[in-house]
Length: 178
Image 1 (spheres, helix red, strand yellow):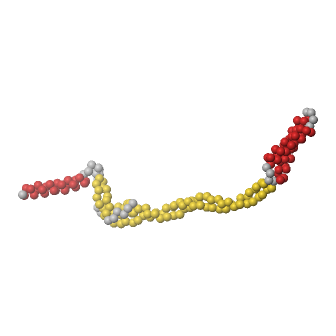
Image 2 (cartoon, helix red, strand yellow):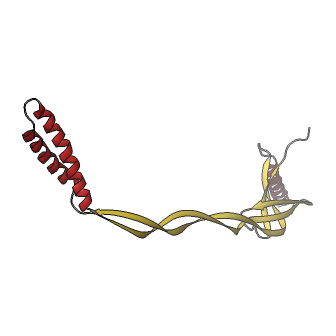
Image 3 (cartoon, helix red, strand yellow):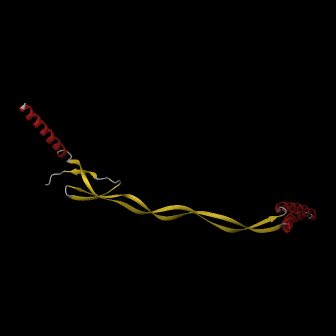
């Protein structure tokens, strides 16, 4: 019975030492432990935010409207009548010249007649114009937590995305001091 207790004690002691040896004797030299949190403060930052908006205004617009007969139709009619008259007035070789002069004169007279019968109407309307503009404002946003923790008598501070509570998991690296 005494021998069994000694073997059991040695086995338990070996397991305990083996566990400790594994924690510190890993090939990478890194292990994880818990540190006590001593202070947590929220980190607030002020950010500039763009907010698109619309800016609108009204502008007067002047319109000119021509009403009355079509100048093209009057010009065409004048051209035909002038050409026929020129052709009838001219004699011999001058007939071609008279036809050409009558055509040009008829076109000008027809165009002038159409313009004299047209009426011009001028009026003003108001049109609204809009454009997109960016307006900026400042806003406070939560950026994380400034966490101070104590590990083996030393205090460390780090910004974290969350509040870790009473303890924080830490990574410990062990390297030989050469």
